[in-house]
Amino acid sequence: MTMNCHQIVDLLVDYLDGELAVEQEQRLEEHLENCPPCVDFIESYQKTATVCRRALTVEMPGAVKSTLFAFLRTELTSTKP
Image 1 (cartoon, rainbow, N blue to C red):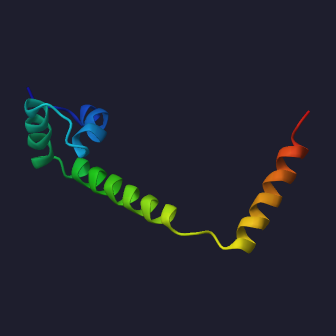
Image 2 (cartoon, rainbow, N blue to C red; image 1 turned 90 degrees about the vertical axis):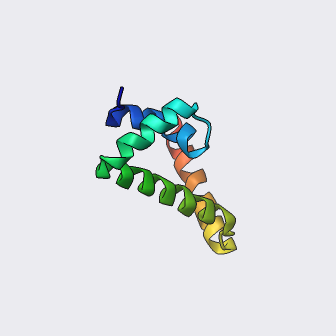
């Protein structure tokens, strides 16, 4: 039984973490052989995760951090009932 695109999305995280059962992984990979949009989706997902990991390793400059926190404090206090 072949998988459809919706099923691929549901299994994506487990697939990328190597946590799928062998049969599920084989079915998913068979689908990928014939579905370029799913391949593109998985590649985009992987790139997004990589970019996010890199962004979290960069220290925010102190001036930007102070400005952001001041803005957020103002916004949070101005929206309270």
